[in-house]
Length: 630
Figure (cartoon, rainbow, N blue to C red):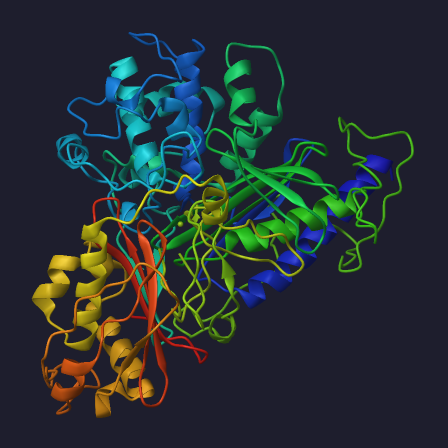
């Protein structure tokens, strides 16, 4: 067996061993995965199945913008990356006249993180987008001075593509990128895909069951995450990005993969890692493995991740079809196992000791390929179409692993922030907007999308971007309107009113978690802290910009139809009249948290606003106890 074949076998064994364990811990109704070696797909499972890849779409959007910039895509006007977005978006309000195309591409526009609000807007019409951006959004920081993952910025890049070419964004990506590359199983409209190959998405309910979610159709927000794809098509995309052949796309595809916007350095286990955002891709570099390029996708019903290692020309793709499936956590471990099997090994002193033995890799003359401890040796490694590690299970059964997976989640990449005490943060991407304490798999993210990502064991989570902005001293102040919303939310929790909830909540709130489930969790939290029985509550929290108006005097009785609330008072009249609204700690202009002390425990609340001042995420939990979601 040649050295190249031996390295390939070791990599397959290591990846399969890792995935068998990871899929057992993080089950989903259906998964798909692929292993890329030397730019070729050499192993995988469910290769003909089409999943929503969500924010992995962003690198295709960025490629379209750069393709126009460098002449690979015909256009009717010259596009400069330092053009203001307002040049392409008519009647846009401030600060869109200050945010450039480059700012939007690199998540430097200062727009606040907008998962899970934006995940529900894909089918928005162009006219509705025009009306939306005619209003001034909240800003996290001055454009060009920091990093904050923004779906809205990428939606506007879709409009830039349309204005520059005179064609629909989806048509430009399909005709100029997907078709020439032969990505025949990738597209924006689920109606155009083979229905036998389309994978349905699910949400895990509070009782551990699964609810199927209807897919969204293309619209003004397709540029943020609208693509469906298969493992082989994404493998072909990775191979094209690894291919340095000189052609009209060479400059655009090189630039897509270059670090552009520094996020931060993480110095946790394994040595320091420098993390940056490029044009639609993340770059993570450390002394042990060198650079990985990657992006996650997180949409309602799906979690996905692609990650590759340019030095060894290897990569891993992972898809799952349940909301906040931790694809990034799984793919990161698999990719590191692959690179280790190819000769990159962790030394106690953190030095990188070898490079890959595959054809085309830039290996030094002395290579010591080490068998990873966790690699399961197989006598006959399976081919591309062979079965992967079994992940079959009853899709309606609750996941014990999911319930146990309440480890602290580090918000990273596209939604940074501070979780409420005693809770876990789930939300991709991301590449993605789950809420703290949800009894479902932890989110990979929004997107995030690279959104709110669980830190893998021994991994290197990306530090929250708040810290970077705070160090630079450029964070914008919290608006008076945001402070008023926080006060209204606390009053709502003390005395629930559906009409007030309708006024405060973004539409995604009831789509993500039905209101009856939210109400049931709130009832449980108030009962656990003793607020629902005695009504005694005192405000508490760290010093900071707070809400200083007193709570209203009210004795609101929850209707018998509300779960777990029959014939009892939520907050006693006298106590509600005397209790102070707590001090609110604002971790950004759109994120706040506070605590309220009850007779039996402390209630922790975390709030996140959309760029347009609605509640997109609201978490209530019992501090220092098992987290509960509301």
